[in-house]
Image (cartoon, rainbow, N blue to C red; front, side, top):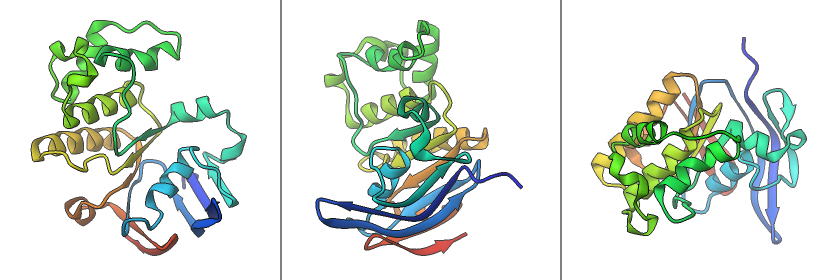
Length: 217
């Protein structure tokens, strides 16, 4: 049997004197699609940020691919474990600036063909490439952010309520792309409030008051 890609053992997070997570223990197998749900403020996003190395646990351990998470160099780790924010974080001036970034940090050259193909995957036109990011709609920004995160296929895709506020068509496009990457072997861990997404979850974890409340298949 394959070694788990993530193992969390009694993970806790205390920030500013407030306990955000307590005693979180579970594992995720390579290629799984895990959905995390729970009330607002329950600790879902905190947990995802721990997996993304944006927060460091104050107790317990996180193991990734057989090694303690803390032993990885963060840039190398984040090339393997890609995190998508609820509010898309775009930078620079244009869509091109965002899509060329993953190539730049790998010291590679991006062609227009590669960039427009990434846009097409998200149902965005080639003309979008040099569009200023301040002119993008919320749905366009989220799709550009996701396209950027997937230009180099990650081992793990962490999604923090990425479909919140999207219209039905855009949500369908995002779901299709994520499922496609999952079918090709990417492990997906997604936080959501969306009842439709919860209903079709492959595996569901529920966080309540900073604790793992329910594990469902």
